[in-house]
Image 1 (cartoon, rainbow, N blue to C red):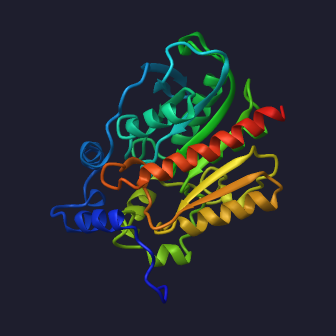
Image 2 (cartoon, one colour):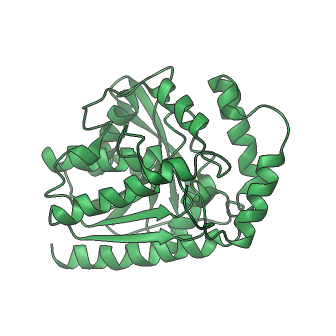
Length: 319
C-alpha cells in the first residue's frame, strides 16, 4: 500500500462513493448474461448521450466462426478516401458491447473527424480465448480491403480499444505487423490495456478494491476468458514490439492495470517504436464510457484525441 493517499478528482470520488454504496450483487457475482444486462443498464445512467452524427450504420463482417456485427460512426455523410478507426470495446472479454461503447465511439468520430468502426467480437465464456482476438484480426483485415459494404475507401487503419479492447488493439496490430493487411496500421491507441497475465504489480495491490475494477472482477474475467499463458495474444508485454506503428498509450493513475500499461510503454520505447504516454491523473479504469458520472472525463478524451490526431498527421506525412 502506498504511504500517501492517491490524488482522486472530486467527481471521481463522488462516483466511487455512489458505486461502492449501491446495494445488491456485483456483476462478478452473477452469470455472464446478467452481468451484461447490468453493464448495458449502466450506460444509460453513467455515460453521456450519443449525440448527433451523420452516419450510424450497422454492417456485417465475415469472421472465422460466422458473422461479426459492427457499427460505423461518421460525422460526414460522404467522405474522401482516408483512414478509419477500428475500435475494440472493453469488458474483460466477457461483458461490453457496441451498445455500451456507442457514446464513446460517436464522440471520437466527431472529435477525430474520421469514421469509427466498432467491432462486436465474440465474448467469453461462451467463446473463450482466443476467439475474441481471432474476430478482431479478421475484422481489421476485412475493413482494410475497403469492401463495398463499408461505402468507404480505406487508406489506413487506426486500431484502438480499452482494457480488454486495449489488449485486442495491441495483438491485432502485432498480427498485422507480422502479416500485413491491404492497408497499414498507421497508429495504435490502446487505452488502459491488459498486456500480461502477471498480477504482481504495485498498482494491482493498491487499487484492488474500491476503484471500479476490483480483484474479484479481474478474477471473474480471467476465469471466463481462460487465456493461455505464453501466447502473445494473452501476454503481448512478453513479446517483441519492434516494427510496431506509432503508439499512443493511455493509463489511469487509480487503475490496477496502470503499472502493466506503463511497462508496455517502456517495452515500445526500448523496441524503438514512436510512443506517447498519457496518464489520466486522479481517475479510474473504465472512465472513457462514464462521462455523465465523471464529467472531467470529457477533457481526458479530448486530450487523447488531440494527441492521436497529431500522431496520425505525422504518420501519414512519413508514408
